[in-house]
Length: 233
Ligand SMILES: Nc1ncnc2c1ncn2[C@@H]1O[C@H](COP(=O)(O)OP(=O)(O)O)[C@@H](O)[C@H]1O
Ligand SMILES: [Mg+2]
Image 1: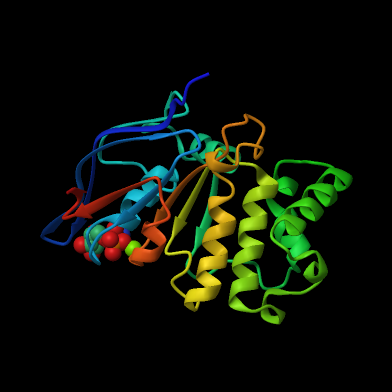
Image 2: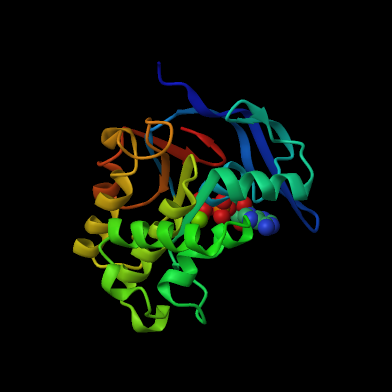
């Protein structure tokens, strides 16, 4: 089997109308990302990185252009179909961790599986394995406020591992962490990609797209692209 693109965007545009002003947040982005590939996206503040991430993550639809995700055109789907695809195929890691404060680590990791209707024993087993994979077996009953930033980010990654998406999208995942903790987090994220092919159902590993302005994070990627004024420089 060869490495196939899992993300294929063509001439993607996103236009925001702010009163009389029109902002081309994305202005003709074409990009393919392979299964198991680790892609870093860099670029100045306001260049369109988060907008691109929102489109790739099916959180929003482009104004024009096409997006083939795993062979399916998702650029024109309804909100409900888009959220179904998102829940199945995409895992998110954000700078601000985005865990649910009232739930402990294990419950946060299980939540997506609960939405999917998985029974308790399946959820528990997946959460246990995932927390083990990120080295947090001994913190499963801790709430986010009882965990360090690095530990919270590891819970977010465990949440991705348990849900087993094809794609992990990470927007500045190390932005709130000191450099050594950030390096640990990136090591765990990179271990989910093709360089560690034991990972995932398909044997390709997950596709990882990381937005970063940290050169040491970008240096870990298989490929780096620069976004400038809404397009790939
Ligand atoms: N919801 C929105 N409404 C209007 N303009 C937006 C919106 N989101 C982003 N923009 C504009 O689009 C451009 C790209 O933003 P963004 O993708 O957040 O950049 P980055 O993540 O690279 O800092 C900026 O000019 C920003 O002001
Ligand atoms: Mg941003």
